[in-house]
Structure formats: C-alpha cells, structure tokens
View (cartoon, rainbow, N blue to C red):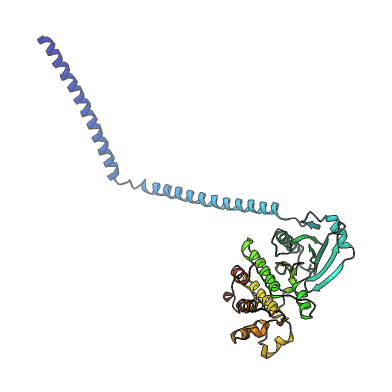
Length: 396
C-alpha cells in the first residue's frame, strides 16, 4: 500500500512539473514577442529606408488617383457615346406624304383630295383654310400653313422640320372635348397642311360678327357656356398635359363652335412651332409678349380675358372707338374704367340684358374679365382657378 501511494505522488508531481514547465515556456515566449513589438515600434527608422518608403507611398497614391480619374473620364466618354448613339437611333425620321391619325382617313384618299379643287373658307397671316370632301363622304377642314424659308443650311432645315413633325404628333395625341383634334398632316417640300374635323358653325369670330349684324342671337347662357368651354380647354393644356402646352395665339378666330355652340380651341402651339408664323401684337396679346417677348400660361389667360370681354360687351377690340382717348386705348382698359366707376352695366351688350339674375352673373363676369386683363401676369388668375370661378356663375 505504501508503494502504491508513493507511485501516485511521484506521478502527480511529475505532471505538475510538466505543466509548470509548459506555462513558463509560454509566458517567456509571450514576453519576448511583446518586447520585440515594443522595440520595433519605438525604434526610429533607419535614415536610408525612410525616403525610399516615402517615395513608394507617394507613387502608390498617385497611381490610385490617376487610375480613378482615368476611369471616370472613360466612363463619362462611354456614357456620352452610348447616349448619342441611342438618340441617333431614336430620332424621328422625316416623313413625306400624309401622316394620318384617324382610322376614317386613308392616306391615298387624303392625298388625292388635297390635289383636287377645294373650297376656300378664309385666310389669315398664318395660312389659308380650305374645306374638302373625301371619297368616303367625310368633310374635313385643311389649314395650309405659309411656306417657311429654306435659306438656312440643309441640316438646320431638316432639324426644324423634324421638330415640327414631333410637335404635331404630340398635338395629335391630345384628347379633350374643347380642343380641335388634329386628324392628319401632310408635309410638302416647304410647308405643312393640317387636317381637322370640319365645323360647319365656323369660328367665334364669325358668330360675333353675325351677332353685330343682327343675323344671330346669342343669349347669356350660350355665351357663358362658350367662355367655360374655352377656359376648360386652357386648363387641360396648362395643367393636364405634361409638359404643359401654351396656346400662344388665343383669339376668336382660333375658337371653333360646333352645332351646339360648344367651343373647340384650334391652332394650339402652332405659333411657337412654325418659324415664320404671325407674331405681331394684337388686342389679344398680353403686354409682356411685345414688351419683353415673354410668354407664359398667364399670357393665354390675358387672351381669354379679352374673349370674355367680347362675349360680355359684343364689341370688336379692333373697333376704332378703342383708339380714342376717352376709351382708354383698349377694350380691357375701357372695361376696367367702367367697372371701377361702378358703371359696368353700361358696357354690357344690350341684346343679352334680361332677367336680374342674369345681369348679376354678367356683372360678376365683368370683374373676372378685368382681373384676367391685369397688366402684370402675377395679378391674373390661372386657368385652373378660373374654371370654378366661371362655373359657379351658373350650373354646368
């Protein structure tokens, strides 16, 4: 028994000594590593290796910067080339002959109808209006725009034609009950012919001329309906279309009336598209248009204000009366003067004066017209604000 206990004690002591030796060996190695690290971190670099290390570091940084800059330049150049190539592939080709947007019109039928004799409806500085009948019995109205000059270089001329073509295709996509829909167009060598639905009643200008000659009676309800239809058409152009579209030439000759006297705006945006269309100042032009050649949606509102004043007074803005000193020089200033003096009733068309309720509506409409005719665009309401202002005058 004593022998066994001695062996156990001897073996346990041996294990203890072995673990103690391992622990000391491990501890000494760790302390040696720590001293080495401390020595390396605190020892100053040798004078011969410091400049070499600094030069290598600078070369690495410059290489990285040069690579980044070169990569950015190559990426931008590649993106530019890809974009240019895509635009070249997607550019609109210049089409010849009829471009039709209505299934009721066949290109060959339209081409032959335009070559045959057509009935002249009227003329304007921007072109002539014709009436013609297709082989299928459909009556259409054609506006032949004045030829544009080809004095510019060939590339510029093609660019202008391509831009006009793109804008016409965009206008053909517009759909609103108070807009004349573009059914087709024909590009000739140096001009365009636009095809619309034929409206037998004619324009608002024709209707008001007949009213002045006592050949037509237009009550206040019909005139207010015309005004509401016009401003709804403008609201669609200004706030529904993206990007918004400006009319640029709003006046009674560009407002067509159907059989129920529902107005339809014609020639939307054509003055901007065609390089040589008539841009002269007129009674329907806002002051900023000929003062600083600036046109906004509020300029369209000014034109609407003149049309509303014509509907209320029955007077032609071109009347020599407005050239006299006592009239203020324009229909708008004359109407503003009477409204400020509390005599707006004197300006109303006597043929539509009737019930007291209608007279109150008309006097309220005079205030709206005067606000639309403000000299400063910021003082005019937008077409979006005018729609409820006019519709609240009556039930539509």
